[in-house]
Length: 391
Image (cartoon, rainbow, N blue to C red; front, side, top):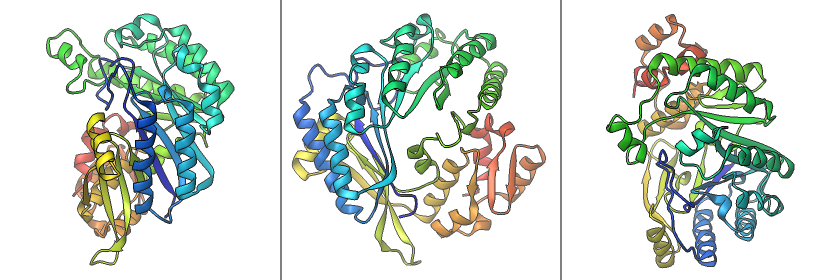
């Protein structure tokens, strides 16, 4: 299996729900840790039986707040994954963490359990913004968490949210400069978006939360790209920046359209089947687990796994997904590879007229079979993709 298998493990619980968050996260007073460990192990074993012969290249503990998991549970899941699949020599094992003191105190134990990369939900470097974002930590606590993580893990990343209400370009440049000076090898820098079903959507609909206009958003995006590149952490994906070699290997598997297994509530996966279709290509199967924690754990108890649905992906779907994911990357996508993988003719993948027009505007570039969105086009990616992708 080229590139190895990426394994995603979802821990759905949080201390509180942030007003901008639409992730599958839930607040529960009590969590039966032993029952959850056993259920995750069972769900993993089921998926492993269906992906025999794969080798795990990365594990990502996401959430929710997986740093609330006991280190013993993390260690048990890592050990089970190695038994089931075996690990690549340079396996990347990432865990998302919040920077409050309770979770930071667990960093050493999590590193001992096998985690070698941590992704911190810092989100902002000032207390007023953190309060607005509903975060449970302060700015000083966040800075201490970064320092503690750098002392425990080989690789550290953290998130910041930009394009916030009332934020000026100068304020963001100062904040990003502070972030870059902290010396981590990876930053995830997201513009604030209003997600359906969140508290922020309600406020936005009432006119009580106003995002920066398009011109300021564009200036913030351009400044982010320029500052990170100058600091040696260029954008390798539209919102992710890293020193060469520090890119998230797990997320690259998604963006390069590799195979991944999803375990836990709401987790999605995509695996290659051992069976070939009529065209001789191995089929790709998309999996979806039950989203609500109680429904997922009940399904595992009843069936030995938490799968809600499985579907065979059509050539059209595979090609479309590969293009939409790959064009997020600075490296772009290899159209010949997409054609070979999906069975869709290379000439049918993109709209030639739209491509020529966007190339003339300096927004996209094609060299041989490699197509990529240029830096000038990344801010317009949502508009470019439906024009270029012909499927």
